[in-house]
Amino acid sequence: MPGSTVNERVAGGDGQGDAPIADAVESFLSEGVAAFTTPGHKRAAWLSDPLLERDVPLATGADDSQLSQGVLARAQALAAELWSADFCRFSVSGSTHCNQAFCLALGAPGDKVAVSRALHKSTFAGLVLAGLEPVWMHPEVDPASGIAVGLSLREVERALKEGVSAVLVVEPSYLGVMSDLPAIIELAHSAGVPVIVDQAWGSHLGLHPALPRNAMQMGADGMVISAHKTLAAFTQGALLLAQGSRLDRARLDGAFETLNTTSPSASIYGSIDRSRQLMAAPAGRELLARALDLARGFRVEMADVQGLSVLDEQAIAHHPTALALDPLKLVLSLAGTGADGFVVERDLWEAGLRLEMADRETIVPLLTIGDDETSVGRLSAALRESLERRRRRPREPAASTVWRLRAEIGMLPREAFFAPHERVAVSAAAGRISAETAAPYPPGIPALAPGEVVTAELLEALQAEAAAGSRVAYCSDPTLQTLLVVAR
Ligand SMILES: Cc1ncc(COP(=O)(O)O)c(C=O)c1O
Image (tube, rainbow, N blue to C red):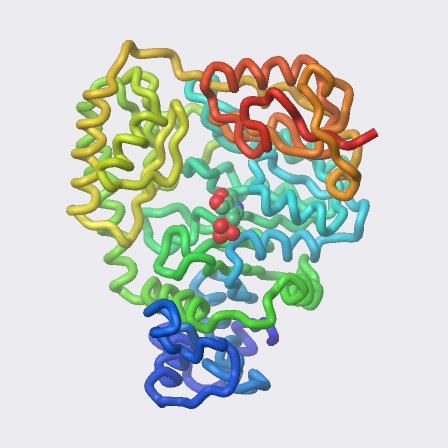
């Protein structure tokens, strides 16, 4: 199942108006095929679920068993073109798969790579798989709000001096803030080092003039996007994209394939293909324009809720590390209302609404091209009602400072992963090597990562955060009474 470059596009007149895989799925479904192949349910909805009727595999479904029609290659080439890349692979395992494929393609075990400490756990797992040594780059954090406001060039320069073979960043951040990526890329390229951007939350970027450009357009060598997060792909649908010659293309393709299932769903691929087709058409830009209007309207609507603050360009403008904000990202800070984000989330849940993220200080409702006035109106009304009910005395935002305490690397993430582990009381954990991650929210930057040496100061600070009601994510005992460490 080869990757594809725009130049290699299979002849057949495919243009952005076409959707090769999605159309092949439809043809298959309309042809009344008797399939003596997987999936074993044979699209018999009565066996378990109506969705089975549309569950089509790539091989023997949207393509023949030899995958000789190049349907996937054509669809990937079209996606590469839309996202300004020259190489693309579709994934049915999310940005998780794509991040890990990049890690496996970047170096040999023991090589150093510069990694933003805002990394997603999938990249951490990628470091374990590939045996890479991270040189951490710590994003700046706004002391007032606790929000990460981008990576400084100084931090990237420092990492480059350590002889890294790649720079891995997360842009935009989970909260929509983008660093000065063009400057970071220029710096890395002048040192001959490729830049891989985890843009899982930014598959819509670069597709409308009012949105920031995407990482490929800014000159990155690799980019990962979750089309299922902000576009119209089925859950799990994601894309790995690359351009230029700094990455070994064959190695990248091989790494992607190594981690890929041998039974990808053409239904998921088809939904990525349709998403691309939609976003390339005027209708896609109109949907983005509508979503941008809805986000703007929501900000205006929330402006008169006393004490509530919605992150906007102005709030990050004085941070030289922050280049832009994704205008579709709605980050609501509750401290000024005195309300507890966990309680507000529960109210909304009971009112039939779900939030993408909530901690005590911050809530993030995800607004996308799938929303309309009705859905956003429902959110505004429920939020207003909950905030009025839960309003308390305003408090200072509890911006965690724990992440500032820098732990020392004791062993490679891979060594910590494979070493035997034991659970110890935190009182006995100082001096031991952690086998797990602890990331206080906000800003969600790990204060401790597997392979790092635990200090008494760090533990005390983490426990205090947990006791104060902050969310300390990723650790197996969120109360931090115990910690998983590498056994002696
Ligand atoms: C920054 C980042 N990268 C990667 C991922 C993984 O994405 P997926 O769920 O598509 O595997 C996430 C998931 O939330 C993420 O926040």
